[in-house]
Image (cartoon, rainbow, N blue to C red):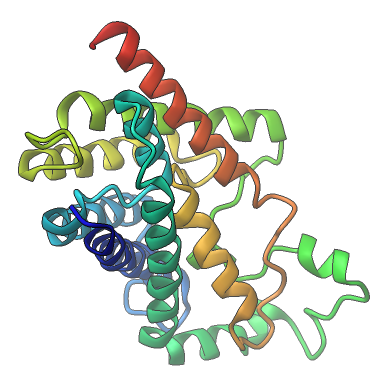
Length: 262
């Protein structure tokens, strides 16, 4: 795989992942959506199918890592760091593109939701006096773009992301690699999608299971930039957790693989 193939494949694949994954979050969250209040099962299966679609689409070009933690795990396993930054760059760009496409697809629903007084309160309800307070306050649609904890305990939130990502990356390394060892093959796509559903059902409750730094950081940046009325803050004080936790989990999974399976 050339560097250009990797970058293009990861950009396209991660954009599809976030478009469909963020799309199900928007469908369940936004007041004017036909799928509003469809619940956690819809979200977990929606993300699983998003992974399946994205992997099948991008695997021929890049091996379909679609996740910096997966890329890190494979790099540690193979001791090959030559394309890590190319993978990460495509993943972050693709995540931002996917989040922007969710905004376009649900543009009317975002406006209806964020101008509804039952959602955001009366005039000025979202106004805060300082940048710090605005960034700390998670907005009413931030969950469409990125994750957040139900109970904000930093060490536990990090641990939850580490545990979930370790399961994901270990599943990729042990079951999902193609014959060349560079990414997900056909069977690996299905296995990984089902693993993501399982993680969401079993471990997603505390933090929303980012288990992917690009999946959280790229859309969070887009949320901060989009001209959405009454959108509130992007919760940057939490943003490091769904980046650091999954990277630690990916490294742990590679360590387990090298000790137990190599």
